[in-house]
Length: 295
Image (cartoon, rainbow, N blue to C red; front, side, top):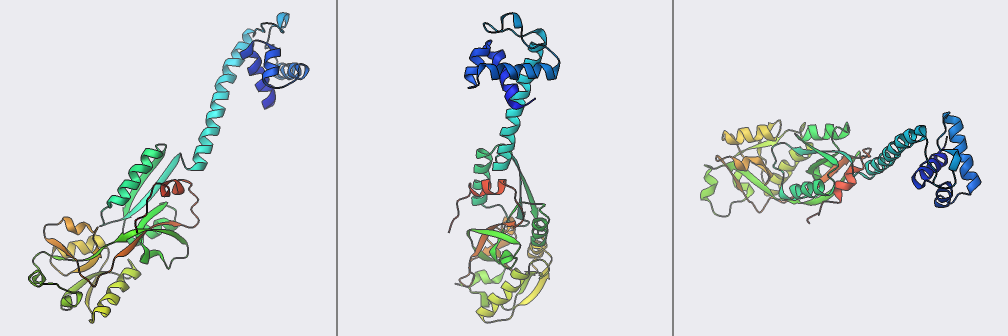
């Protein structure tokens, strides 16, 4: 049994004529008849009434049962091909995206997610939050497909491929009762006597070093208290235990005890979309097609 034989059988049953079916498939009449005969021999049943096979060809009861079954199989076969092609194109499947805990999902990311779900409803979108070290472990294990993170966190990792998206404003995060609010045009050096709540080098070597570098540019060496992650940083900020440099997307902004201050010394950071170089999930490219980078 082969595909041509199946097509001949289905066409003959549908057209009720060997001649019409042969013409439809661009097969000679003798070859068409041989294909039907070989099927009948292999299956051990008569498919057509041979008393009047050239005009108004009729299926036998066995042929009718086989036609119904083959029609269903044909539909399933076509659906399977379409489904497989859609999976390969990234139109069906699952996409797992990681976000940094302690940072809100900004409007640009939300817009991309909305467009993606509207354009590719067959793809299940799974979102996951984690601290910096968790995100990179998940990427390395292919436990997530994409991660929204800062360029400084990934640019030294050769196994990560990333694409720049947009800039995120850096701000100083501090208690609302901090006396600096009485000062006009404050600068970073005005905080040289404060304790800076900094992400530990184990959590993010790049961000840990960034604080020291920015303070050195401002002309002082900061007093530093290392915290395990952004969530712990927010906890200490709420308790009034220090100040921190962070993203404007930091969820500390939602606390009534915390404020954010723009300083001329602080430069924006580049947000990127990162993935493991070895991750071949086709849904990644589909998501990227829904994203409009903002310079």
